[in-house]
Every structure is written in structure tokens, then in C-alpha cells.
Picture 1 (tube, rainbow, N blue to C red):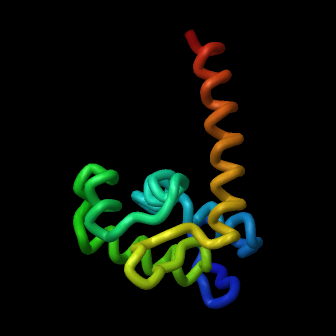
Picture 2: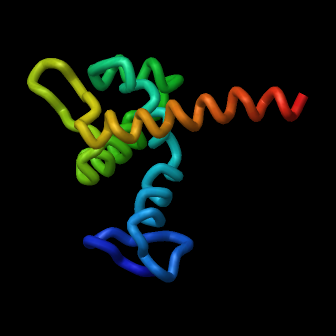
Length: 108
């Protein structure tokens, strides 16, 4: 498995940055965590509730990965929040949401 910046990349022989990002975002609950943080910081408990009671172990693991990637940060007393890079990525996700809404109409 290729390694980029110390990160293993599943399903890629190139290890290109886009593949590293897709690997990270493709992990269970990662996108949901980012989606739930789009409107502002949440505590661990609040985030877990918004994520349909994801197991604490999985939530901790995903948060650690997202923090290591500098997409999510943990603030003093405010819980978890998106970093500037996370906010930028959130904008891309909103573009995907708009596409999905239009696409859904095509499928009907």
C-alpha cells in the first residue's frame, strides 16, 4: 500500500494527495462528522448524538484521524470544530450536496 506523508492509502498505487483525501473521507463516519461540524463546534457527546450514537471508539478514532489531517481541531471547552482547511472542505461538501439535490431530480 503506498504511503504519502506517512499515511497508508488504500486502493491507490500512486499515493496522490487526492487518493489520501478520498481514503480518509471514505472511512466510516468521517463525512458525517464533518457534516455535523459544519454549523459550529460540538462536544464529543453532542457530536456522538448527532451521529446516531456512533460507538465512542469509532468516533475517537475518526476524530484522531481528522485532527491529524488538520481538518478538525479540539478547542478549549468548545469541543471539536473545523479548522480553516475543514471549513474549505465543508464548502466543497456543500457543492456536492447541491449536485446531489439536482441529481436526485434526474433519478426520479
